[in-house]
Amino acid sequence: MIQNLSKLMDYIARNILKIVFLVFLLVAIIIKSMYSFLDMPYFEITNLYDVGMMLVALGIYGVIYWKRDLIQEKGNYLLGFIIFMIIAIGFIYLVPLKPFSDMQHVYDAAIKFGNRDWSSILNDEYWNTFPSNVRLGVFWGILIFLLPKSLITIKILNSLFAYGTIYFIAKLCKLYGFKYDKIIYCYLLIFSPLIMYINHIYFDMPYLFFCVLAIYLNKRYDNIIFSGMALAVAAYLRKSAKIYLVAIIIIVVFDKLKSIKPFSINKKIVKEAVKIILAVIICLGISRLSINFVKGIFYGEDYKSFSSWNQIYIGLNEERLGMMDMDFSYDRTAKDVIDRIVDYGPVKTTEILTKKTFWLWTQGTYQAQRYGFGIDTQSEEEKFEYSTILTKHLVNDNQTLRRMINAFMRAQYLILFALMIITLWKKRDISNIRIWYYIIIATFLTMIVYELKSRYIFQCMPAMAILACQALEYIPNIKELLIKKD
Image (cartoon, rainbow, N blue to C red):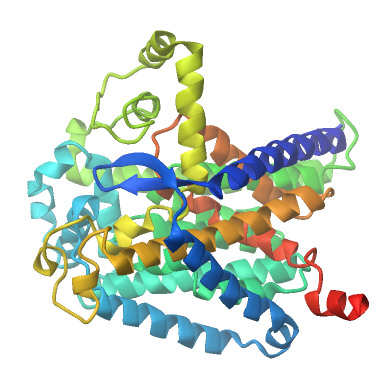
């Protein structure tokens, strides 16, 4: 019974993803999804910047692939760490972005918390609209409690979270038995969104790290309880950690109980059930207690938060294809969502959902150009702490350097996306890595209706990387093909 269910779920996830994503990739070659700093998604035709930067990216990764056996044999994690931190610190120094928007308030709260100035944290009126983000300020405040209270400290911690994510993705590829785990390691060391997000003082980098760590711990030590501990931190930072938790539980059930007869109970079932329950209690219990503790200290009984229906309602707005339109309401319900769908009708609703989903999965930067370089301004002083040789070229998204970086970042993403699709089409038995299929399909289905931000699929980057690593084994050896041809 469990074996049949797992095969059915594998078949559905694999085939939905491979068909939809292949269509998206083919369309994305011509039509480019773009992000406006007015928080508007839009589309334009692929231009020379995109073609040029795609050739550059293909050239770089082509050399890495050509030397894959040498890199796999001689590759060194310590050297990789040093290279990445040099890149990260160089980025921090050369692009000294001031915190802005949400992260400005989170950063201020973190510094106040770290300096034990707890009573003044809620003086910021921002918390009247987004009170739940105080927990992010507390999180960063705890991390810097014994460290220098500065922006650079947090950005360096972000760098370590980014590297940790890369490291455990590579280690997972090795545990899965992939031949070229160090190639995907090299690929991610220069993956632009991971570098850009070092400037983003929010939940993204630590959240991604703890989610990947959770799956690594379960795979490495075969213990879901360890995963629950890591996911407790991730769930404190963002609710969508539940997607990872559910995926891990499903995998444990499929892998451990696949040979159990229906309706039978034995010690193995009881043992695994206890582990799963403990993992859920640890993950959801600790994260909920921590969030409630922060609420109790900073809000008392006056705390309010928006329901998920609010984000779904926003995610269906026509004007911005589901991107934030500031139409918030504490009283939003399922009826409001249904009324909006009825008002649009099936044709318009389908058009909105199709466009937003295509935009989401092909925008290609996880909106890292916003969070790495800040919103468009007229001068360096408005967005950077000081001037460097780069800052004058990074003032707005229309400048040549910014356009080249954005195009290169998108090229890197599309290469990763294309490699993932190769695995989706070539690998029929996905039992060894099905957890990543489930994480992608769950995120895919959720984001069809949820508020639109390409940053929200950043949690699927590890899944894309792991499937891309598998794809390297399906790509023919060009040198051998040339020899055979001769």
